[in-house]
Amino acid sequence: MQIRFLTLVVLMLLCFGGVVHGQTKVVVVPLMESDQRNSFIGVSGAWNCAITETCQDVYEFTIDKPANAMLDLRSIGGSSVVLTAIFAPGQSLSGTNLLTGSTADRECTGQNVPYQLIHLTLPTAGRYKLAIGRDWGSSSGLTGTYQLRFYTSVPHTYHGQTVSDSKSQASGTACPPLIIPSV
Image 1: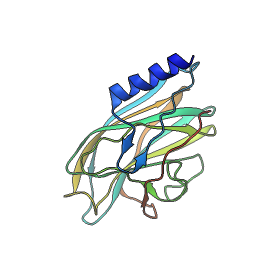
Image 2: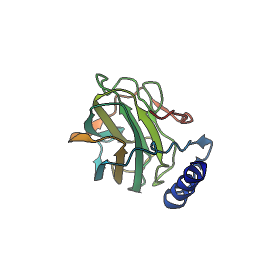
Image 3: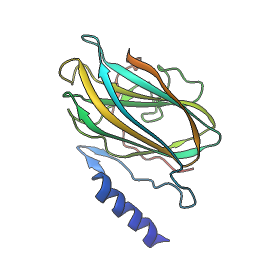
Image 4: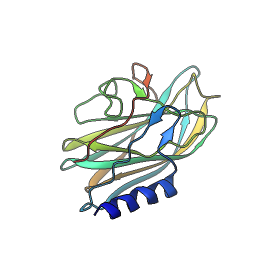
């Protein structure tokens, strides 16, 4: 079992890049061995933000039980710096972000840098919000593009994009280390 775990980690590193970016250490937490990536969201998105505004697109999905998940952002364009947030059921877009443990958006990369894989635990059943934002102060211009890939270890119902180019309601940004236990 330990060899299969190490093989999975090595394959993920080869396929998706390293686990260290600047001072941010991203801990790779594989989906449980008995789980499969049996739910997937794939989106080619774009921002068209108002002048001086940090904006975000929001996607929503529902799970029936706690799950492990993986967020992967690629093809970042338009000199954009990406912000991410995931809100648990019942949380507003100004609520606690599961990726920071605060009301701040997660921001850990520079312009046009693909996000490292982010593995996390979705702790309860219910409807989640996934926000993909663009930092006005760190990006250039008003527009940008991205490709979102989001996997869960249990089936989910995808509700689509529910917010487009809306002003971020976060209190700021943060880049805490991700050390998140699996379900």
